[in-house]
Image 1 (cartoon, rainbow, N blue to C red):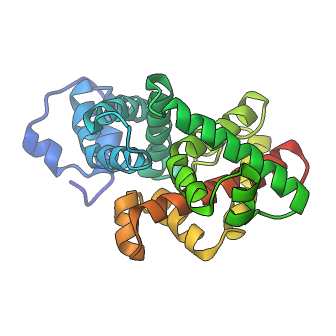
Image 2 (cartoon, rainbow, N blue to C red):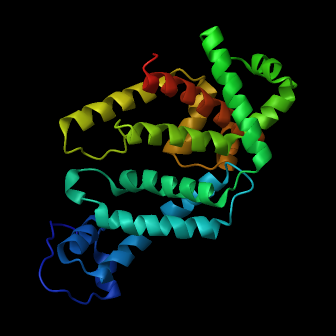
Length: 273
């Protein structure tokens, strides 16, 4: 069946498990889109449960106070089911690309609603964010750990610990930065979808190029963490094993990288770069 293009239309029908298993994912998508048969939808959703679990474990690993993985998976599955309905396989993009950003966004929304980050961590994250922004403006470059520690009035070790603990706050605030741009009429963070309006496509391309430059401005080890976390979907623990350093060190690198990206992208979005 997978050797030729298959088109499904007409009346709803009953499918055996053997028939469903024989379909490629692309064929299953087309079958569901062609018939609207709910019997086809959930077998399609279940093919991506592994992706949901991967993202759930990955995002949960950013901060130790997260909810149970099962809660995150359930949220991801609801997002996945909705994405199946909205996805257009004729636009030439991979469903994994399309859905990964949406699942991550749903998990971040869940983090906000359930307030997973303790108040003390949020306060320190705000202090770090403010000090980083001030020093960046004063120095014209990213501040060092020593400069940040002095501005905050703490030791370098304490600063690095606070930085590692604020990883989730930085992810949330970077996400909020893009949300603010969307609400003000800007382009959404690119996810590979095709735009109906040429100006939307141009804005997304500009945003993607700017984000690429921002990532290229990071140190090599920070770029590696960003690539492994967001592109390869590895957890903090897995990245630590790959890079042969401690998990807290990976959290520090991740948080520092996100902090730098926020500074870079904020300048772009406010027109000061």
